[in-house]
Each structure stands twice: as structure tokens, then as C-alpha cells.
Image 1 (tube, rainbow, N blue to C red):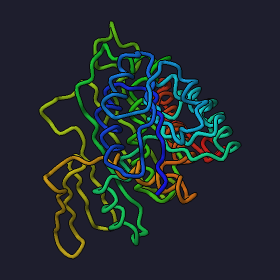
Image 2 (image 1 turned 90 degrees about the vertical axis):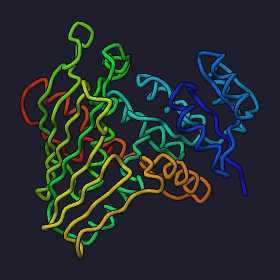
Image 3 (image 1 turned 180 degrees about the vertical axis):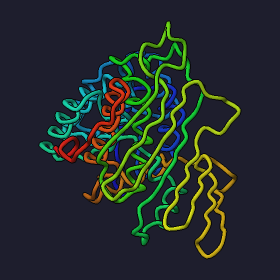
Length: 334
């Protein structure tokens, strides 16, 4: 079996806590090179994983013919330029969310990926989380419109770089895209409008952009998805919960580890092994390997990535204007 040589671009906490352990458990991948602007971090990752080398020069990764796929886990403002350079270097790509900080960057990414015929995945993993996949299977044969609520709450430091709109894009672009993607995957119809109300709930001396709010997405079939995103949250309270109502039936997902559903031949419950939170990252990289090795469709590919990104920009616009904002396929089908 061919091994996929991975070039890690960004060796920070998320890469080390999530992608690296998952890659090392998947026999189709080999961590081949580690790159970070902090050369010590790159060296530590290379030594821990048995990578062939470490570097602080990203172009060394892109020019290395042995590298098959890159994992980009850098700050958000670098996602678009790094993705475009990776595509032009004929590397397959997994880029963490967000896809980009604006629609023009999304268009350029789409163009580069298609022109160079590489596989592209963005790190929207919640929609393919095992417990969500089970919920989608329950809903698959139900044509009725859906009413969905998702909570995303956690303490989020006012000093975090993601609040800088030029670097991180702000909370809705930087992390809200995860949930906008999830809502789109739970509804078969395309989104048609976004309305958001919110503001700065953290220290306003430090955070100059909206960091929390309630967002409603209306879909073409009349379905409605609402998410509450709270940055001034409570660490002792579950971070996420999803409620889905459709055709007189209900599904309740607790933090991606436990699901109850009612109306489907009585009340039932599914709990993941060891009651462990699983947001789909393992599935994501497994599906990407299959896509590369078998020339199949990438998980969380270009259209899906751009759709959630476009919604996130509309959310920022809606909060700024206080008005609903229309969304059409022209906003994400490039």
C-alpha cells in the first residue's frame, strides 16, 4: 500500500493534539516533514514523529517531490496564500478552518485547486462526526422541513489572536464556520438568508469585533437553523449541543458523544464508546486518504468549504447592519 507522505505546515497545539496523533494511527500516512516558523517546534515534532526532516522554510515543503499532501494548521490569514501555493506545487491539501478571510480568497483557492487537479479538504469535521452521521441517516428519508438549534459556548480569551479581524477573522469567521457547515449538512436545501444579532461580550477594550451572537439561517425548503455562539461561556458546562426537529420527531446530540432520538419507533439512545467526544477528525483524514489514493471526491471539499465561509461573512455583515442578508449559490459556487 502506498504511503502518503505528509508535510506538516504549522506545529502548534492543535496539530500536536489532534492531527498528529490521528495521522500516526492511520497506516496510510507517514509524517514526512515538519515546518513551523518556530524552528524548535518543528524540530520537536519531527523528532517525536520520526519525520525525515524539519524546517522553518515552507517553500522547502512545497518543492519537495516526496511530499504528497500538506496539512495546514497556521494562523487564519495565512490559509489562503499557503493553500494556493500548495495547489500550485501539486500537493494535496488539508487546511484547517477557515477556508479564507473573504470571498475573493475563496475564489482564488477554488481556481488554484481546480487548475492543478489536487484534492482539497477544509477542517469542517463536525458534519461527518460519527454521531452526526447517525443523525443524518435517521433524517435521510424524511422530506419535511427541519428546525435545528445548535449551541457553541466556551470561555474564549479576550487576548486570543482570532479576535483580530485581519489575522483571525473574528469568532464567526474563525470558528462559527464549523457550525454553519454543520447546519447546511443537516438540511438538504441550500441556504437563502442569514440574520444575526450579537456584539462584543468579552472585554471591549481588547476585543473590537463582535465575538458572540445568535445566528439564524433560512433554507430554500423552509427549514431553519439557529446557532448560539457565546465567547464568554462556562468551562463547567457542555460546549456544544444540537437539537433537530422534523416531521414530529426529535434528535438531541450532546457534545458529539451521546444522542437521544424520539418518534423513531420509540425513544432510543446512542452513546459513543467510553462516552468520548468525537467531532469527526479521524473520519476526515481517513476519507481524505481514500480520496487521494482512489481519486475519489474529497471530504469537506471546495463547494462545501466556500458555502460555510460565505455564510460566515454574511453573519458579520448582518451583525454590522442589523438586517437579514440574502445568500445565493453565486456566493459559493465559483
